[in-house]
Length: 273
Image 1 (cartoon, rainbow, N blue to C red):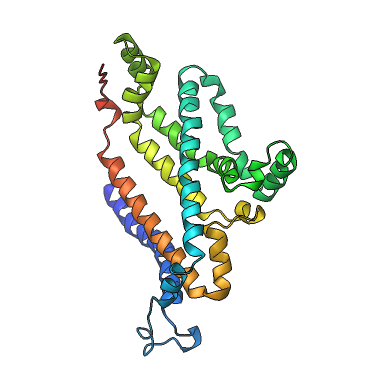
Image 2 (image 1 turned 90 degrees about the vertical axis):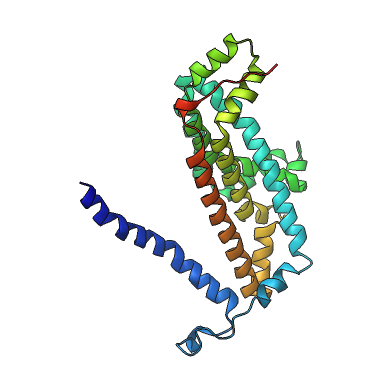
């Protein structure tokens, strides 16, 4: 059985690795080599490599405001998603298990409703009553939070399901801890990996979302990169490659943290006055 599994392991790993690595190599060549594809050969494979396009894009006056806006929107979206979902998923696991299926269906609405329909509906419904959703940059946060629901809900749900939740809560309450202390000092430390993963996924969604910000005429990083492709296509591709590499590295770091995180069998209750 182990021999059969080993026989299939490496071919699958190689195919999956090629699926991710080959496009990244193609992006790298396009972003950093100034040789047309028709002239690419053995003699020109390692010639005319440069990061000038990437540096031109990063040093552009419009890049930094767009990048910082996306970072701010990502941070606020992460805080909003965690503030909404952490108490909600806890309540579903403790008091409303029968509603979990309905919550899963609701969390999938971001896949069902196209972004253009979401923007048109929100603009028509709230333009007169809550105009800041359409007029300000941070009006994108509620829409981004909806886009993050499928990833965020399932990640936190898996984190809560991995805990012996009733035992932890009952023991903490029996020791005299309030609900706030139980949530902050008992549950949050045991959900560290799920919270980090949720935060990273939500932040990545915001950094890569183009349709909503474009329809609402907001200059975020994705909309800037689309504009920059007309002026400096290699630089825009270099920025996309850099973000992809950073995302991959962060995923690897999260994987290492997850492996080192304590399992449910080693959960501890520590209540400090």
